[in-house]
Each structure stands twice: as structure tokens, then as C-alpha cells.
Image (cartoon, rainbow, N blue to C red; front, side, top):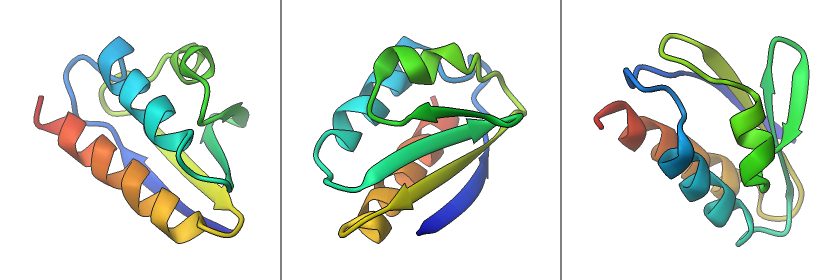
Amino acid sequence: MVSKTVKVNNSLGIHLRPAGKLADAGMKFSCTIQLVRNEKVVNGKSLLSILSLGIKKGYEVQIQCDGKDEQEALDTFVRILEENEAQ
């Protein structure tokens, strides 16, 4: 299992577009992907689950990946969240 905490700097937070990118990317991996915020754990492959976290600017989100391609999945999620910071 690998994990990393990312701080969201996008002024809009994680809205529909970046949540969709995360969910679409997550579906390409066989590992389990979870996002954690304030002890709430959701499926990182589910658009509605990601949106349910209500992630706003300044919030920290932990990404947890467990399985065969866990490191690649983690790197992909971090990259998407970092790209989102520039939007």
C-alpha cells in the first residue's frame, strides 16, 4: 500500500471536471484507490464518491492505493491534482 497527502490549491476545489478526470484515470488501474478527508474514505474510481468529499481550496486529501499497479495509480492521481492546482 502506498499513500500521499496532497493539498488542494485550486480556487474552485475539486469540482466536476477534475473529479471526472480522477475517476476516469482510476478505472484504468486494477488496484484499490481511496481518497480520505477527515476520516471519510471514498472510492477513488467513483465520480460521485469523489464529489461527496466536498473538497475545497486548502483542504488536504490523502490518496491511498493498494494492489499490483499502486505506485503508478498514486503518481497519476497526484499529477492530476497538481495539474488541477493550475486551473
